[in-house]
Image (cartoon, rainbow over all chains, first blue to last red; front, side, top):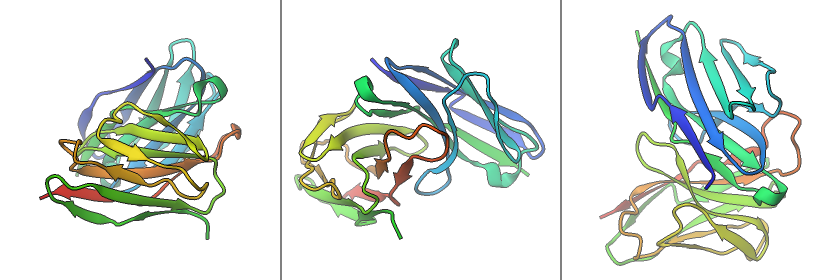
Length: 113
Length: 116
């Protein structure tokens, strides 16, 4: 059965800390891994990763995929209270996978002032 | 502007009632999805559809039904068989076949369903 597992499930840090969120997957026909941030309603897109070892960066956020380990990490440096959210990891399959898009349980990040 | 529209935003269901959540997209996407989200948790897949008149069960399809009669529309019915339907429901659509980075998935604003 395909699955995506995120850890930790929740995390409380103080402003300025650096956090690392983990995502591991078991998917029969992996095509891409996506990270989203969800604050109130619809998730907002952060990164899409398809190639192993290539870091993607956006400001204080960065992410990398390791296809050998079937995992990805999302790093947030110098955290701010506005980073408080649920961070979702999703894995996409195409073709044989039937277009299924599977999400992990999410990591709830709380950044304290 | 292109996007996904979900309605209603808030819905109250009485015990034993069926309710239908609407999801419409004008993005010309082939694939559409329904997810359920419980407080503080991730998204769980209910149903998905890759093409008109075809759909597949996700991980938690019991107590739900869908139809895909038009490319633009993918309504979700929460039946009385769903014993714990109170949750946040998200519809998404996807531009398939594009893997060169960037966002390929679009979400609606979600619908809150509460059983009263």
